View 1 (spheres, rainbow, N blue to C red):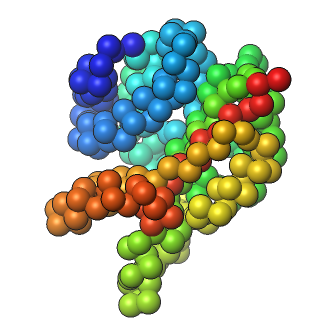
View 2 (view 1 turned 45 degrees about the vertical axis):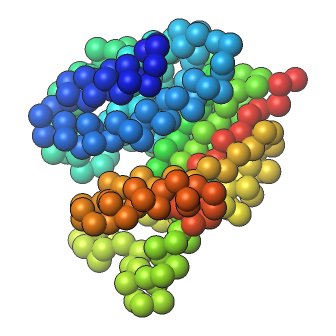
Length: 263
């Protein structure tokens, strides 16, 4: 594992540049968010070496998180996704997954809601899912039951979602500027891959209670604004990020973190 934050940033940037050329800018731009995810998982196990940790990421697609964990020295990293997003059609599967294969990520291609994870074998220290749940067309209740079974005692569940009622939406929706998704993404595509239902803080606490998680933490960040295509939105979001963290319910990105009972 890199010894400090700068080294982790350098490592992730280096790995991001190993992606197919058309995907490099997006992956490099995502380094700060991925670094936050990896650091959170590592800090949850302060007495463990990365090589002793096993992690399963649900719905991570071809993104940098699973590869970054493997490159940072995690003992086992499993990535589960159906890989049916547009990027998988535009890029050859071999070139996309060559980075994952290089760093030893176990890639499992399936609809995680339909097929679950009960057969993956071995307990996991951490199970993660970032910006995927809002795309699922069916309840994750059964899957989350399997998550609790698959986690080791004291294991970490770390979930990230867009906030349905963030500060921007509270301001823009009354003005008629807060469409849920574009007409084209819903009407023109054979299969809708957009957001089905975005949760809020209360929804995440509901999930935590249903799963039986302990040491529950709700965290707010503002990656969506800071990665916006408009420069002024990025600048405003960067200025507002730290103050808004005090009120996660206003942030653009929400995290639920909790542990499985240790006994």
